[in-house]
Length: 303
Image 1 (tube, rainbow, N blue to C red):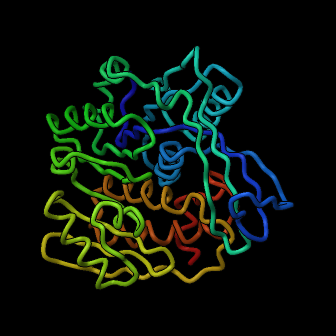
Image 2 (image 1 turned 30 degrees about the horizontal axis):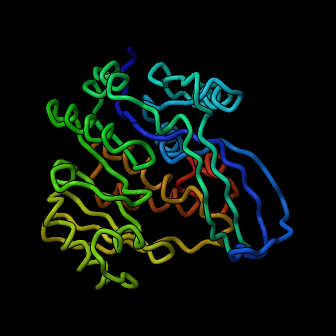
């Protein structure tokens, strides 16, 4: 089994995207504009972002045996991602995401997880050595929680640094959170876990304090166009976002997470890592699509 500095455990989807003037309300039909189909899934997006940041990446995921799964694996290979830890489901289709994007770059996403939801503990056990050999384990919440818990148990036993992006937000045990080294949330996810409204830096700091009681690691709350709040022990650092003309925010959070993981694997100071991840995310929102929008390492100095 291959080894890599960064191990990404997560989802692989094919994104079907339509851009329109505004997002539809319930029962509303809108004549949209451009349609395109691109590789996506939070796990895959973050794996690609890390790989484009000049890091060796192994991707643990599950796809169907359909054309979408075949195309996804071929694409990951082209990105330099190790794919021998990607499993095939012969009964369920590959994951699909239906995405609407409005004129301001805001989006709404409907996901049919397919094979993503069928990754089993036995399969994860078979790639245990890949997790053990990695410096960083990066995960999201588009796959079964029991698989995430199992992966964390393996990583903790072998001092692999654990980064968890709580997207999409769902209930997590205190035991799981206590073992996470870096927790990344956007404002809606932070509100889900804290019950607090988060519209400014002060409210983000209060939410970070609350989260720190359950996850005594590094807390990063992203506030979209405002930037990111970093809490490391008793230090609070506001990192403003770059000002850009946004056209599609689909993979901004995933770009941030993947680049951050790459910087952590390179042992970069966390403040510098967040700044670079923020730059990469800002570039991504100026482009359409998920993985098609993720910049390469040499592009980060454009801004």
